[in-house]
Image 1 (cartoon, one colour):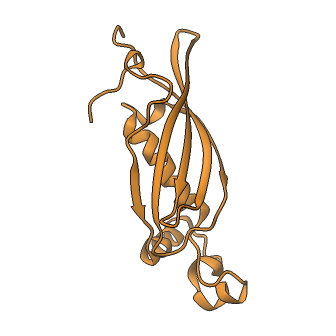
Image 2 (cartoon, rainbow, N blue to C red):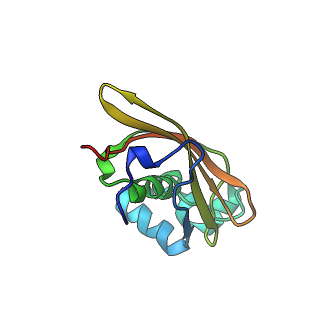
Length: 143
């Protein structure tokens, strides 16, 4: 991906969208990676007994997709300085997440070029699964 410069972005611009299909295998692999074997994530019957209708993805697995949207856009993942999200709907195996970001503000502070973005993840039914805000630093063409 080409480098994005502060001078080239404007309020209202959209980040390149990202689509992710969440699979049961991903959820189980995530449980292995993080050690979170809560039955609502790994056992269909337990999740049904809990009233969820089946297993659900870990919130942080969904959150990772939102972070990927932003870090794929940045020249360096360390340029993501802040992200705050709210989980608004459960994610299930088979859900196709459409993750989008929109620039809401840009400003210079302490000689750094900041960009504030609104981020949203929706499933294939159009239900928001995550909403939030992120702040990143973009390079200047003169850097």
